[in-house]
Length: 242
Length: 148
Length: 56
Image (cartoon, rainbow over all chains, first blue to last red; front, side, top):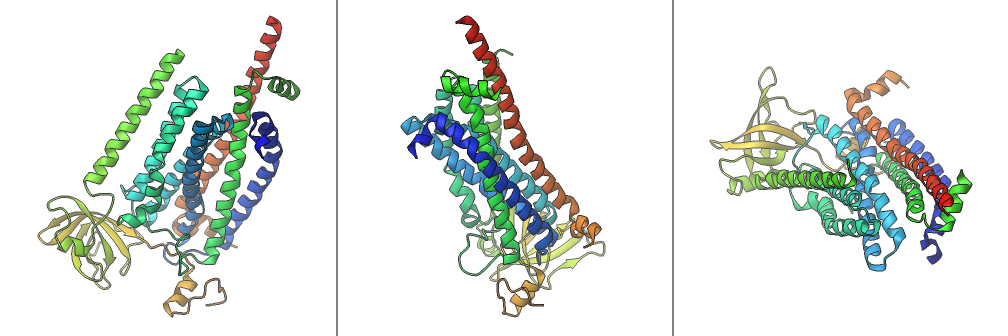
């Protein structure tokens, strides 16, 4: 396992994994779209707008999941000085930010017809917006410091401080009286999502997860080449690909 | 642009953006707008007086009265314990129904809540209409698709 | 199945299809940007090694 932590081995491992992850993403995405658009019934209250959930909820889950991964990788990079963790954290930020944007936009497109407003300063919505600003802050730090090592450290510290926002997002619907409804899937006890709606949701969530890992590897590979450009293996790899 | 200037531009815009965001968020929290008060809390005097706040609860069944053009409505918001009368001039959202959750933003004026904005709140349950019908009869079986 | 009914989404077609379109754009960008970056990095690195080879 440890040998894959070397940039060279990881670069090649990522190259071998990518086709599999791509295939998994495409298959899960097609299955999720078919189930979500053709098989799932309209909701008893919200009608056809419930189909927005199959995008909105996986995107929102990923926005938090990616943030935790990014902050965790940042911590690993800070403590053990592992270059690969820095590259991974840097690759996470833009992808996580894009999931956050997607969750906010689809939430808006769902909120307008159902709640009656595009945007509400609700605790859940506000904390998710703060998540977007945290991602932007991390990306700005990475872009504004030239030395990749120092950039990674500064970004990791900001990311770690921002982790407090993750439980706030998750529990906001329980701690405060919010317009946003409480969690459905993680709720214990009585079923709150019918299987015909839950299965497409979980399929799309799996598709988003596979997609995320594929896209992160896609981002990490050129970043590894750039940071390791003084090594002979990168010189050879680049010549070979020409 | 020189790299140094570019870096400066990034830092300045990030700081300005984050400050603006923080101000917006703090303003929302200060004016009690990120969460709502229940009728019980309102009648216990916990909601701000003479200030805009949010009132949330359920639209009492049979309480909705609308003007003929549907643009002026009066209804009662309840939390099954206390009730608050609400007056609203404007279009109600699609999901606004009797017996359903609602969040209204406005002010108390002479004992009744005058809303500037009314938002429908839905619960965390998602199911097809047939399942909802079965549930009403107390016979909800998850995954049972044969039920009418 | 009735396609015009499918696209109408019970009157919520605009909201549902805009959501899916936004998702498609975001997901596509996340793939296209790293692919472009990959190309650019390979190009600059080839240039870098060429110059290095000339100097030595």
